Image (cartoon, rainbow, N blue to C red; front, top):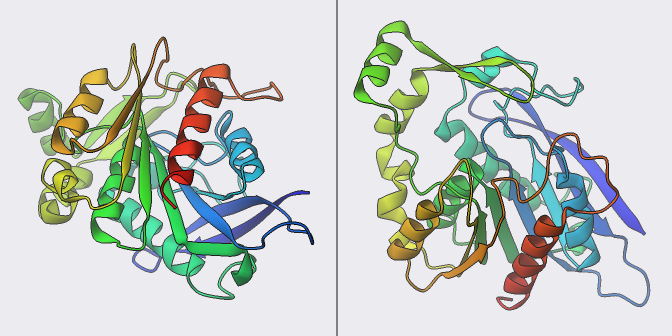
Length: 289
């Protein structure tokens, strides 16, 4: 039976609550109890229940994994709220250190018996895998670089660098005014980004420097990217591969940034391109036990 349990964490460094959930097939007498664990990290403007992400959880659970996804604490989603972006002040106060610490805290509680509703005997944490989409792909690479508990990593449409990429004039205006607004085309919201995210990046560069850290990754890496990605170009995947030549690159023809998904997603099945990506990723993890 497909089972999903939810739990809430409170950030140890910032005090903000954020939600996570785990989906798995409940064990019976004919199955092995301990399951490999996949932790999924959403991207910029994303959240754990966006579009088809719950169907991804079902897919990986049916392949024998425990699939864990979280809302990063400052993604704009409120515990007990609408489930969509609504706390724009929190969104504006997000930074890469918050995100990396949130993911680390989740991994820590998974390794702490009794800290989540999941039975400790259910989790085979010797087979702990990370998947990140878009900016979340950059985040899982950073976490793998600093956490030896992670067995292998997969990125989906990932960025290759977290450094601010805007023209110098935009950066100067952002610094002067303290805030830059990013449109959310899906909702019509103007999402604030306070300049503190840039300050946080430069202040913590040894921990956040993807171009320097990716070549040091010891874990197997699968890089998945759509050929015509309209948000993060395919060249980002090629940059990652150049920095880690032993990684596997899986290019998905005709796949946009969301691999066919959208929010809301009303269909009962995964988008075909997302199904293809999920299958390739599950196989990659199974090949790296």
